[in-house]
Amino acid sequence: MKYNLTITAFLGMLAIVLGAFGAHALKEKIDPDSLKSFETGVRYMMYHVIVLLFVNSYSGFTLKTKNSISYLFFLGILFFSGSIFAITFGVPAKNIWFITPLGGLFLIFGWLSMFYFFLKNNK
Image (tube, rainbow, N blue to C red; front, side, top):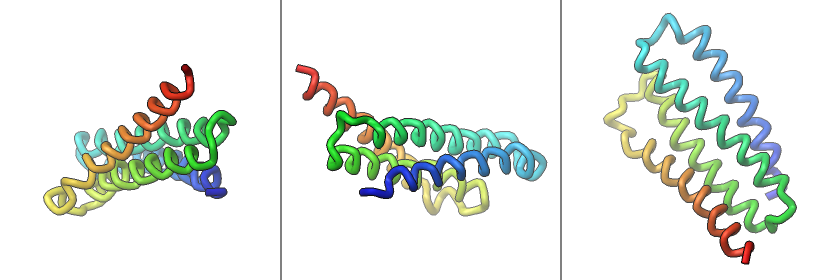
């Protein structure tokens, strides 16, 4: 997908905006545990944006590999961080409790895909 870096740049910008929003606008509006969860969502989002920059800039990956890993991380960010943000903004956790761990699985599978690629290609 030729838009991987464009999506990654957007997600990086969004992580900064959400981080600033959490630090300034949410600090007085939500309880400390909710703020901590929100910050976890932002932190994991930014970690994976940085990894996506590596994945999509690494010349050792084929386009297919870049796309596969990117899709896993995009879905992981959407489901993991997105569900945390949704809960912070009032969606009842009991309605979407399964989405956060599903997002975590996508993130794990993204890392597992990279691990497998490097293991397979470093013989």
